[in-house]
Image (cartoon, rainbow, N blue to C red):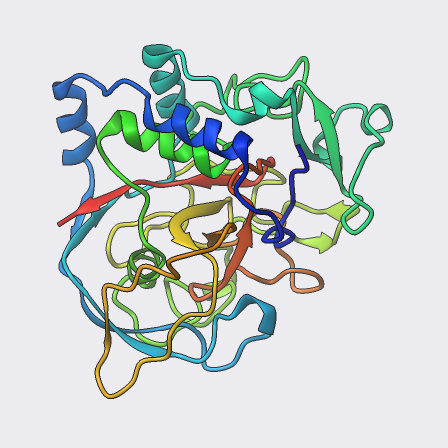
Length: 321
């Protein structure tokens, strides 16, 4: 399998392997009704309504996150946090599900997180800081010898879009649409860069988990973390939702493509293009930095192939209102 990294996906097409992963995700047995009710009741209800989606002007035109457009959403519910390692472990324990990274035997790990980066030399030419690590998957995020001890409350990573779908199948939930994700991320604020306003570090203090230092060789960890942070790190936004910017990229339900521009009437519950291959990811990650990939704004988006997994991709769940 040819996995892709941050913003590098989108060139593939559905094949027999994708069909097998999709079938496996959709055939996961459902959780017990009590479990489903518990997971559903934990979601935050949002009333929806009108909001301005996207950016006035994009720094990365290929992301297609501009211009702004007026959107109207129906009520929906969304998780306060990204899915944690503990939550994903519960799902795996109950279902026996094997992630795509496990099936393929490897995933991408950021080089500075490896105890022996010289051991793992295979990397994409365009992003050599991502190392192909045999045996890396959600429960061994840095490969053989690593585990989740002390990181149970961190977001699960090394999950591809099919893995997120499998969790949703079990939970009786779904991934948020891209519009729902952005509405929730904004926390009730209009035309702001971040869930809390426009300041990168409000009051001179970090409000999200991103890169400090010189990417990709020096991360000073001034925000408190060099890898993932707990799913409830920092303060929630006005809707009570955590870490919608930084920490880990989050899969959405939508296929990647040009967003329709609203005409005389707002777009109503947009769900992305009807056809395509790559899926939209939102929110940026702990690796985002102004010198390379400052996609850590509420309007930022990227794309990735649905079978791709890395050490900075996770997800959160949603449901109808």
